[in-house]
Image 1 (cartoon, rainbow, N blue to C red):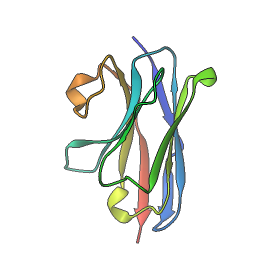
Image 2: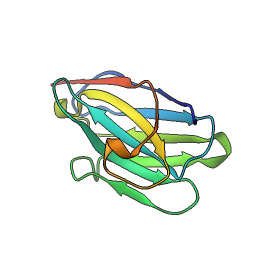
Image 3: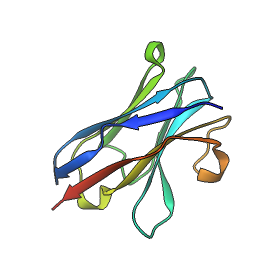
Image 4: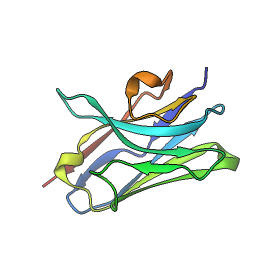
Length: 119
């Protein structure tokens, strides 16, 4: 099973930026970022394919977040700009064998990293 490790979370003010990293020990079809706020479902944020040009964003982050990859380092990044308080959540990266917006389609998960955005 692929091991995934997130890093880069923190506490920032609204309008600030953060960059999350997801380092993978092996390869899946791609890497997907999800986030989960307290008491809420784990929601899709963005995904990227390792070996093709597939990139998809959720409506809530498109235009503010950018997902990218470094194939040589087996690492995927999530650049988050113009952060809002509603972006506050634990952010997880996941790997699987298909592109999906559902958390239930992913077998490999990182431990999560907290992002807190204050107004």
